[in-house]
Length: 538
Image (cartoon, rainbow, N blue to C red):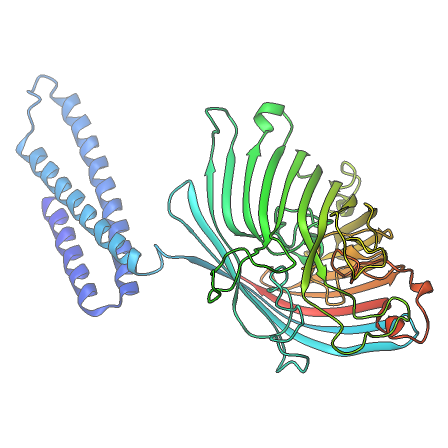
């Protein structure tokens, strides 16, 4: 037995030496893992054999002294040598692990190629369209857990139209690169940071049985609850009926299940900044408060989920944002409906006021109790939301009233929206998912959903009706998928995708727009987007 043990150690040493002399780091790592597994198995067998032998010796010679025999001393010495060898191998594996993939960021890939067919009917009856908008979207996810409690999570993104885009370059007054939508707009091949934050988690808060988390950085605040079903994604924190934009900030989540006895209950506090009021780096006072018409835009909110057992769930969200913006004036003369004279339009921003939003939803994931396999795998949800403007006091020579206005009024205005949807198993495959959704928004409805993944503009921001149907089918397991989607929006009022003031956010009835003017030729009455994509996730 001694010879066998010693031979194994010698062989392992010889193999290890050869591997280090000839192999690559990865080959060395794999070789040592195999050696270590074999040695552990052999050590386990030896210990078991020793224990069995010890039992037999004890039974057959109970009166013999308990001092170790020469043989047992040799066995113990061999076991110690193997333990020492295993520790040495473990140290080497750890060292190689740090230089290869074992101690670096973990990556995942989400790559999508899509084509959209876009059609618009303008308020004056004219049409605009694009028969085929091809685009590539790449998301590179990254994460690393430094400890059990502390980790880093991030995502790099690019969203590019095929070839060189023919429209105005980024250094003009277009807002494609605006921070709230910079990774969602399709224009160039710049790789951007879509999210990057550290994440802390603990099982207790202040000695109480309350699991909690805290994170700060560029937080994932797009593709939130309910819209994630259509987009075939795991939901981020926000409820997408009122918030769907990229954002920098912090959040803290507190699990309340143990205290309330309600499955999945929690609340989450969120706060962040959507615009920083700061001078350029090479100004006289770098990064000092600027002398522009805007102030820093901040938002705070709370998310409450009273109950979620994965079949029945409900949630509530409230937010307030201050110093929201619009352009200094409208490009149209409000009296004639035609464009202003050259040089009179000022597209820079000004602060106009604050905005309250609130939303609540209920969802049933699995309809009925065993009525049918189809209903058991179907989902239905309903969501209601409201927005309320908070215009700031003061004068503004660019509004009809001469006062600061939000959505065309110096008084607070409230808007409403409701959204219903269902998703059910595919009728042509075992793993596919099909869905139907409808939402309606009132005259003064204003959410913050600019980053919604729809080329014709946010359907959830529509002041009017929006209809959508989609089919998501797997091609290769859940790695390669195909989706066909149809989105149709019928606007009742203008300004659905505008900002928060009177320049672009004023709701004017489509039917009341003056005919034969630039305004009616620029306002969309109906819009539709037919999208097909192939998507790779791994």
